[in-house]
Length: 88
Image (tube, rainbow, N blue to C red):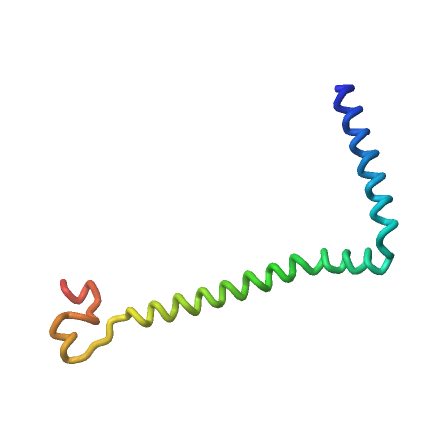
């Protein structure tokens, strides 16, 4: 247990040093922009997924209507357009 505590403490110190180094390279405005970006990412993902869902449902609707049997005098003779219970 003591070994893990030492290892975690060392890692924490390394992360602290890296954070300090990073902060020397960026400004407060960039930090704020990063925060705003992080907050907006889930919203952007939701929008993208909703767009994909709408597009997929539109494709599904088209494919269903494309394959829906249409009745005309020729196809009626073949039984197209009848429901399964029409044959009973």
